[in-house]
Length: 375
Image (cartoon, rainbow, N blue to C red; front, side):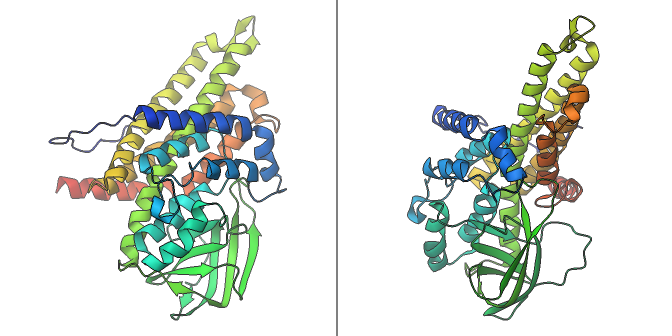
């Protein structure tokens, strides 16, 4: 699939990353290669822990997770470009940590829509890892008839379904009608229930509220504007996770095809497998192009962000899903076994593809943005 790039006329931008940014990426990659191992990921997969605490602590201590949070609020103050590279490595190494819920969603919702008091209270705790935060902004599709949360200005009632990292989180930002509300999940009236999912390494929970104390996000912007901005940013960051995961699948598939022999030859020498890997590579690079453009639009807060985010989301979702499926095929019969890591990437590709709305929903957004641009 080939997605059209935006019109670059009268636009001069550099889509590559600086040497300092690449050094940060290298350090994060080395750390995750040593800590986010298959055995560590499988601990979370088996339900022995809600997330990988050693990996999470390393990301926090390096300042990598809080790269986009300003120093004023306890973050590293680096920027979105650096966080994009951190996201790529998290995807490459299947990091089983609440990075997307805490930093792509909740922290961004606070930055874009919180009052100064709310930012000062919560962001330093998120940046330091003292608190895991999450957000459910009404972006996902569901076939369940779930009534909307009810917020009366001081208390929250109702159910929030499929909240990412809802078991481990201490703070949630939720969509309740036209309001976005902050909820301290250690407050009274909160009931949590873990949900079964295809990818337990990024778990979800159902949250039920009964007269739970809550407060409105008070940053002066309309809730719909905040949600749109946060989801566009999350789409770009998740695209980097997807690109990282797809690139890793290509690496391990290539390595396996050079080791495995059939009929006296390396299986990588067979034309059918060469074609499969070439197709994975082509899709991956197309997704990377869109992700890079999305990173620029996010960092520059450019008017093109909605279009760039939708294009990155669609291209990266398609690439990761295709790579995960073809990676299993390239590994042959052994690719379907529990001992191989192929299924971990397939699970993650499905999870990321639905986290902030499906590929189909984002295709609709992309079409809308292209029509608007043409008009």
